[in-house]
Image (tube, rainbow, N blue to C red; front, side, top):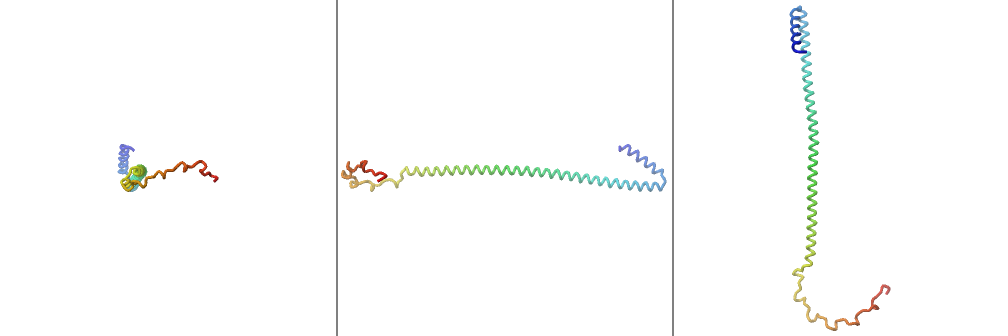
Length: 157
């Protein structure tokens, strides 16, 4: 109902109450009090229920938002952990390659050291052959000492 209608009805009710007999006035007042009490209780209940519904909806929205945020944060954390693991894997791979290269360099430097002579591999004066160590003409093999094809052993013999 609009405000003008409520005002008109209120004025009519007051005039009817003023012109009514006393026992009717008492009953009308009691009825009005009961109706007002019921309306007040209904309004309070409706207000409380609407506030409870609002709070419940807000709580549900907050719960959904938090659940979505938790999933988003979990995904972000998972991605970060995977990135860190990949970078660690790459670093370990690089370290492995560097170690292998280092081993190759060491082994190749060992081989190169055998080619280059050190102080210990140089011959001294005692290593030089004397005249006694030189072969004489009698030590040289003659044509008689050369083997022929008859001297070569075969598999069957």
